[in-house]
Image (cartoon, rainbow, N blue to C red; front, side, top):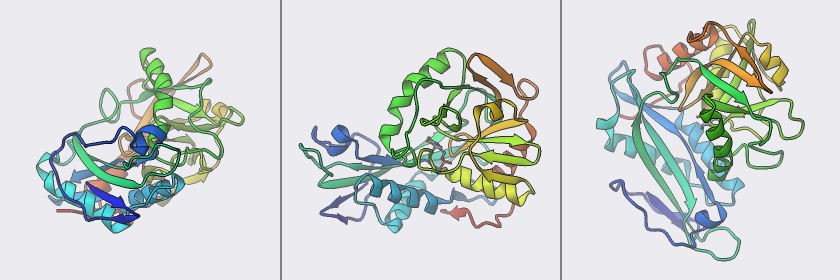
Length: 318
Ligand code: PMP
């Protein structure tokens, strides 16, 4: 962890996982100055441990910090912090292809303040945990999504493009209800017209029709996923046409295939989409769809150094 007081960041230190001392009047607890990242360290075919595009996570945290009037950590400090945490926890990185070490960099307004205003001090912590696949049933088991028609995740001019803590608690109610009804997760629609797909609770969404793949554009209401960006480039390099254009829920219901992307979910094929009581099944039940499978293989192959990395995305740690 490390701290910024009077706008200046100290060098960080490693400490065992445990509770943090916190003022009841800490800004983050009262007014929500908190942004975080999700990253994975993986053991690769070259028998080393690597991160994937950590500079993109650093940039996103810095942008989020600015949006929330926080003191952004310098990029070098962010990269040093995640690197040190991986090195110190190398024993917890699972064997190649068997999972990863999930890293959670968290920046918060830790300083005390009573009236509404930015915190007088900030804390950046990075904690980690070994993880396997995100959804039940394993990595390539198709997921069942339901389109949320009551709540929105983000509004134009709001915080949807930022990985701030406050974006996640409002969706728990819909996510829990969906899970209770047997769905894996929820797809949100745009708050203006209730017509276009935005994203899923913790991942971006892609819709396939023939050789064309479409994903909602970055207009500030969805998270600019690092995986989203990577999949766009990977798919183009494999001859797909990728459009960052609005996708209506009707188009999605008529698509050949849908998949979601994210650090946690990697590339997850969608087995069914339910909208206003109508359920559309994609492909054979239980079988991953072909484009999702191809891109999953390409992405994980690159992340685990089974395939060459022409993009320079792999970041060796130790
Ligand atoms: N959307 C949301 C709301 C998310 O929480 C995440 C996970 N960070 C994503 C999309 C995917 O982003 P990334 O590919 O950077 O993990």
